[in-house]
Length: 578
Image 1 (tube, helix red, strand yellow):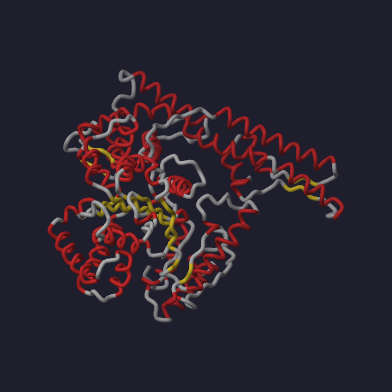
Image 2 (cartoon, rainbow, N blue to C red):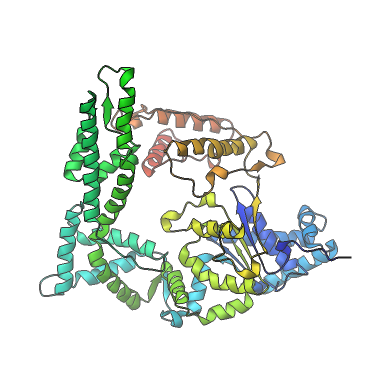
């Protein structure tokens, strides 16, 4: 008989990229896959020490460990149970033998618990760094801190001690120029320059920690000035257009004033960043004949889209131009602070590893781990940043070049940590390579025909009504808003959202959408009961509590911290603990 070819995910090496929307059972899939490796008769290198599962939070790591142990215990004690029914066909082993193997594995986990490797990406990175401290230039017993605060304060104190008459003339000159440039680029004069630098430098360090390079500042003052001049010219063109065609022009005095003052922040608020407001041009008699002419003025204003984009970039970069002067000296003092205190920020670790690897200097620990670790399971793959990914890449490549595997689980729609430099493009790029839509850049040739993208298509958490509402929002409403220009392009696949409801949740769930006219902050006092939002929140919360739900079942989401604080105040005033 001809030999039946195994599916790609059953051959080794292989790579599986799992798309897992919210509520689709990704932790279940990860823990089951981990157990399958341990209990398989055919998977190579299936000992506990050959597996590594990576998560992004301690809670997620703890939950995955609990799930894995639950799988093993249930399989050991309930050979006829639901978990056995699910996994036995996948492994193709006799139930009795599988139950015995699970019992043996429970004992192995307890005896060799340090080999039970389910940990956060930060924990794993720190493990690599401690084993490679000398190669990476760290002290052997360095301390890891999760906050830059103390190191920044120490470095700024060192800087301050060198500023002033009779001290470091170069640094003193830099600080004088910093204050002058800060005012020239629209910043307020800081009466405490160190406090201003502390805040900005902390943000810059957080971003740098996620990249392998360093900040390269550029002076954008002239680019900003050119953009403002182009906007003023467009506004003048609209005014002339209105006069030629006998239309009434309301140029918004505040906008004209902002252009005269070169106040980019106010201008950006009036243009596309403020909802696309257009200087009003209208027909005094409101005749239909001139409607096309009025629309023509809007077409002229549409030319600002490109200019506003350029202004936004120039304005943002110009704001940091002043800080480029002292930042280099600050970084020197920061390294001194790290050496003296024997401390390194957690972000330094992945960055230093990635920089070392980019210079083709592979630390010895990589060689040891590469020889031992064969199977990698990564949770929340969409939240990986470039430095973390570069640190993991050599190990993954080694595993996939032999007979290992990678099981990567993520959801591009949940890529919400871009503010801390998580790079969803890593997952998106790999997905496109696996699907053959782009040339292979990362995907090793060894798994080019043994890689696949899978989708966990069912939602086990939410009722059918909620799932269908989410699908309508993302597949129908969002594309319309994008087409209207109210949102940018869909980069993470939100408009492709689709989930099926599990049988237990068919017909369940409730969704109600209310549109409430908010009162401006200056009208009335929300604390005195005049806010429609306050009334709606209290009404809904009281209704839900009155129907037997607990406070732990209720979540209130808001767009700003101010709104959340207001909601908490309202609830507290009514004796409802929040």
